[in-house]
Length: 330
Length: 262
Image (tube, rainbow over the protein chains, first blue to last red):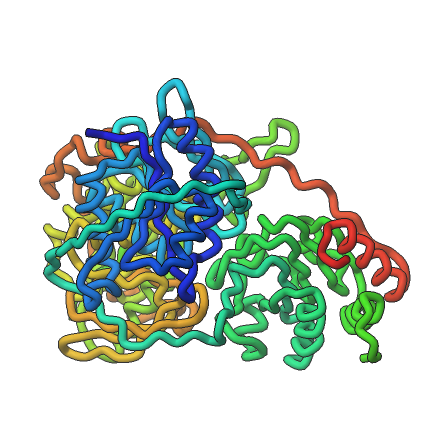
């Protein structure tokens, strides 16, 4: 029997939940209300008590643990198979996941196996209460247009959402969630094998940063990043780089923002010495506030910025550090 | 090693302009290009063939005119080229596209390595590579940024994840979706251009690949676009004038206003 339930695939991160999962649970509460179903947090493997409490606080009424052989649990194919088995049994109306590397790999594998529709990188989700459908709005054409998409004839309706698109908010007096689990034994012909996972730096996920100070070729020298790091630190943010700077070896590609790097959506993005080529801009234009510092008044970055400073970043940023209260002169 | 590179012709979305009066996209006159990520996929395949030998086939689904991107691939040294073109394929979403490509691959394959670009710059979904892998029941490695080793029974690649990198290996067949290759797509050499004159782009229709028409094109697409509209126009930038100290003061004011600093 089809249900009206909303499933949020909760991504584990450092023993807790990836923030995007909490953002989705928050939005999921509204959607569940509109559909008249339950909000279910779906987790691969066992969840700790801490994680259980956390997803409860963000409104999950049920927590469903998908258990499988741990040797299979690292393969996207095996996880997709197991997830599909669960969906076929429990028949949710909607499945949501964060558009992280994990979600963007797993969700298409699931959607195609189920022969249902998947809409990636949604910026808005709402329920058409008359037809009980999820309306999924997303950018296309490099962000030049927005499209609203629906999946009227197949279930579940699936969507991914990037971090920082929705806000997260706790429920004031969260009721206890019902905890259920099931073991699945997916059968697979072939799997990839994770040889090594190299995390560039502990807890360093640029897509999670609220505040980003970013540097490009206009820095002129790699030492410029030392200055940017100080500003990032002072503001409680992270440092990122354009492909130009990364290709020159000035900064790690783990922090590259742009078409061949990461897409970020922070509260504040300060672009220093970045010209604003389209390939960079597609990775950051959804930031809430964009400030650009560049010596070239014709730099395209100013066309998408909220505030612009035409000037020398090696004068502006030290002045900024002093004004904020850095103490020492650069 | 039999390598397949899937490629798509797309409008150059980076050159698309907005009509300032109607606030809609001006699609007329926008040049068509090979999807940049598919160019990286092709470069990746060419690099792999250089070190491990083999044969490269390129496959695309599109209107007849899009054959030119496959001719470009042939002039760079691809060995075979196939264009899936049929009215029945029109209006396909990612599921229908994945199905159609998979049926073609079953006809023209088998392949050891199937290379896709990370995403197409018009749809921007990134779903077709994993979708094809699902239908063919092949493993998939997404967001590949480099190839570490190619052995007879497995390939070892590096991929990017949100917090760093992973090294992943797989046996064959395997699907890769590529973010970038070691270098940008090479320029064709005169010898490969001349060699390519003999090669035909083979056209395949729905019957040639024995595709069920209910699973192709608009009919085979569970998602429907309800409406398309323009994003809110970005307000003009506010320039902060003055000397560095004055600009810094103004910036701090902006930060305070947005609650970034107390």
